[in-house]
Length: 225
Image (cartoon, rainbow, N blue to C red; front, side, top):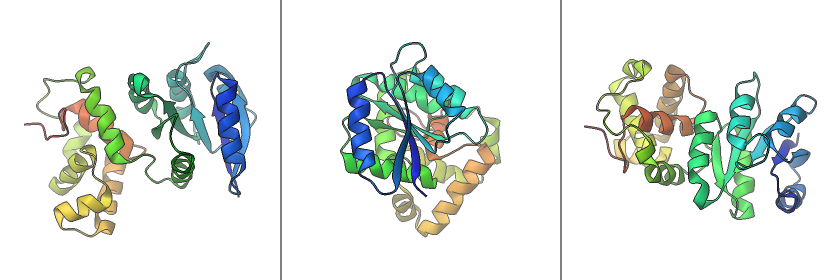
């Protein structure tokens, strides 16, 4: 079955370009388009969608608020925020709103297609190092004086799970974490799954956001002291 994609952007030319790239893929189908967040939400009431490519700055309803409303619904499609370097703060807000990840608008087609497939399959959406760079850049927006994690569920993590969480937040992939902790990659994947379950998070991107917000990891990717 093809991956059903909705394109949400107020620039028609950009939507046309994305549609041409996706239409050339045998496993993808652009089933809807919208010029703003309000139209996207309206479309979802009548069209089944697996992945939403969401712009951030749009009239009527921006991509961040649209993402928040979409992700709050049961069986919601996955959302990929589309951003540019000078709009990174919106991408961060989008991740907090429930987006599964973000991509730059000038991303090579192969990377965009790979991200859509990863999202659809439930895997990581963006390279952890990319997420780390975004959060490091905007770390001044996050609490700077927090020394102890304030998310009570973090206390339920084992010492090893907390260690894995910190490495995820520092931008390491499962393979890199496995090498760092001398574990198998399958074991690391199991730890990440347990972290998601215990903290009630959707994916590793939200793990990164939570680790920074609570002070478990400080600006620059280091462990909070």
